[in-house]
Length: 317
Length: 228
Image (cartoon, rainbow over all chains, first blue to last red; front, side):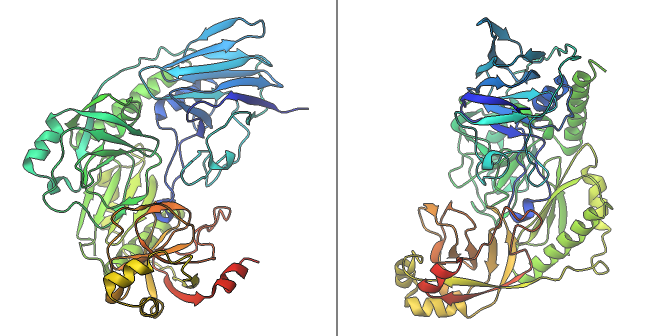
């Protein structure tokens, strides 16, 4: 029997496989990776009846054009994405995010673009046929780790799908509320006091914007310069997702899933967990206002974030 | 031992061991790292995602749905480092070829340090180094301390591509570029030895924090034959 797979007719801008990421490797210089928008990723798996940590395709801006070969599958797309399903009778069906669809042999999924956001996810029932590297399916293109030799997908490549049975698949649909909120909540960083009082005020009261220099490693911002009055370098030390570091040029950088594991720039603040999905979805040119919260508030906001995710996950249980 | 414990965001702990960079402080950091790694392996601590030891800090990131800052802080404060088993660190010898085709910055270093290439190399090879940490890129070791006479700043404009295997020096440290990468260190040679092997899933990084590393010079002929 022949294997079921997606044939890539157009790869899209940055199409990779992601999951919840890999852990316990920071100390040898390997970063976490994983889906940038964890909630959207998990909901894609939920809609296709997978375990929530199953591998999914992540795409950015323009997604891939995929033709299904040798099989019949159940799939779902999440995020805020404009996509079509090209049926065998040449009918073009406009797709909706946050619901599942059956795709027949030789039919195509055309992921045209994300709307007012950067990342989207495609999940198939039972997942893709891939090998884990250090406990994760995530592709880290900088270190070339993970499936597809750690590279983003190219034209004519194949993504194999595990054996799946779609006979008894039920319809699932989530009434997902996309929110576009430019207030990013942060906790003061370990080097907050390296900055002048004026710069501390600026950081919380002025608007920053997302530049074109943004990828899975990090997001460079533009806005008023932040003046360091102690030292523009620190002795290199560990980093985590969400750290906002400020190099000598005074422009903040927010670290995302593929960030370097250590660095020597002062940390002015750290984005709270509850806002990490949101910040990574901001397009170049978007405005950002930082709002300070304390640890207790951040922990409460994370509980709310989890409850909201769970609410979606319980719609069909 | 730990001078101060604070939170880095809502899902990491920042252990500060001091502001200086020296072997004593770094050994403290590594002892905590080894002790915590063991407890995690034995599933005595749950919810920790990552540990990052560096010169004088240890950052512990965790899953906020399983544990939080105050609970983990208590565990760390109550660790008994003395009683727990210390991991034996290894001694590693790295072959280096310093032919001018690999040592890219001898001219710049000679001029600024007022030393000949031979003098720079004799200071460099005449020492056993200590691995403070690994990171930045996968498996890259930060080794110290190099002789005061050969300490120099980073390149003003970093190179876009430094070849894999390059040995770099800057300030009090030496490192090895485990794969091709941008970087600003002064390059004095190249090793044919694999420092990071991603196909070796169990043990990909040859050099680990706490290890002792010495270098020995090889000819270009020996370099080229090394992996035959």
